Length: 439
Image 1 (cartoon, rainbow, N blue to C red):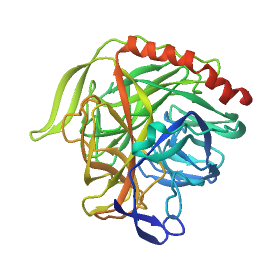
Image 2: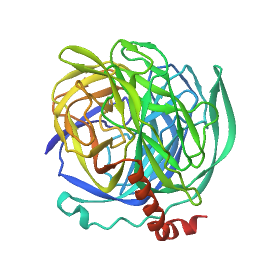
Image 3: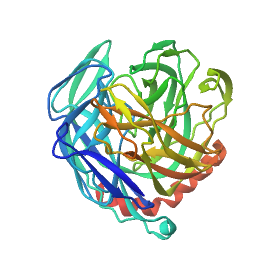
Image 4: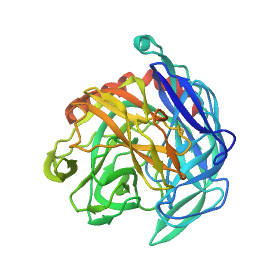
């Protein structure tokens, strides 16, 4: 498959270069451990709510045969890291990389200070292969490095930003590939305009120790998409219990979010952190209001959401997002871009492959102009939500991003408990191999 890659030749904002590349259908198998890397500001910058910036950070060296993604739950008082950025032609996952910039989306006005922790990067170790041979691949051997660094931890209280110097232990965790879905339900009325990035109060969600979260891709609300979730107060560690109070919402059109509306869904994954073992919580069905598009306009429909979770395959594949139209872009204004049709099989969840793949911005979500389909059903992608970091143009045939496709087995709470208990017992040997030398 031939696609056009559009990138900055020498520096961000410099000369644009376009190159035709031939992409083969590839996938990968993941190692059972994930490394953390700290994203620490390397400059003082004034930021304005809703105005994305490319922020310099202390260089982070990423080894070959890895993928990366931001650790969700807002880590800086003023906003979220949406993606990381490379100058020049974006490298392959098989290549080593040096990350020295991130795409930061402010949700408040203020000042980022040098040495502020702005986010955390997850580094996934993978072994690539052609699709027909993925299940025959052995997971790669991994050398996790434990290192301690110093940075400013920030949080916001009553409009005031607080900073505390802290030593941060960067290690990692073992993945269970077992997760549950948590619905993000608005707990207030909020009027939004296209391009607004707002913090919306949601019904409180309790996250047990030893969990990480990732927004579930494919828009769940007609007016926009959830970029991240927020815990008020001092940021907590993964091994601590957390209470989520707000969601960071990007509006793609004018409208009103009402109390009780479903605005998004998060994947909550259970992970291993030495002695920490999570408890799979009981959860009752929830009554929510779905807000979606149809040929009749915006539809609001009350539904009951049953508590469900899943077991994810450690084997996955990539699908390329290719523009199917020319589209003018304005800095900071989300654009809905038509893309070449991508089929999503039943029992599949999707995540973006991070590191910006287009010079002018990043894909923040998959656009849905119908009732959101269930994971068990599958569907088709024809449009994406693209967030520009500067004025420009997307051209037909250009690659906008890449998606990770994972097969999942869906189950109710009792079944999830069984999977998790089995993982705890089966993973003891893996924990010894991967973590013994790190403590």
